Image (cartoon, rainbow, N blue to C red; front, side, top):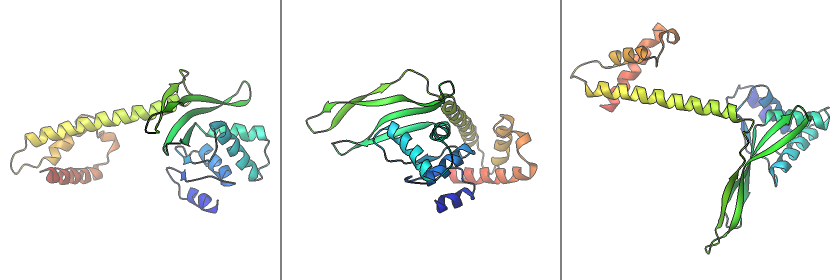
Length: 219
């Protein structure tokens, strides 16, 4: 727990804990609630419901003076998704459930919605487990948050593809002894990939030198 508290003072971008077994759950939930999004932790449990109950129990072990209902509310608001991994008889680990954890303000109760579930159908002649995924059609509560990440990645890939096209076009039209980095930088600025109001003039030469080095490596 002391190591985890000390890591928070380093202002981490992501928090990954191999296994949570006790009072450190309180610090993890508080760190997530205070802005450390994207955190990941492992909790051993039989089902997603048992995982939620274990997280509440571990927070109670820390001696915090809150009621069980208040702790359940804090955990449900901090955790977005529970992914349950199970070891099967064929020796393989499979994701058996993806559960959405949300706190219902009307009923004042935490609710677990099963987004995906793995249904085992049987075993093959080679003793391998076979089954199908069953998906719930309801939109999970974390849909908008996750969609924003996916949309950002798509925009990033589109911008990267545009930069690569401009670079390839410059390489194709390259002439012997011509400095390509400066016109390539100007083209990227004109196309909006490096807006002028976001790049200081003192950094233009640094970007220009980096592009020149990259072009030299490609040649």
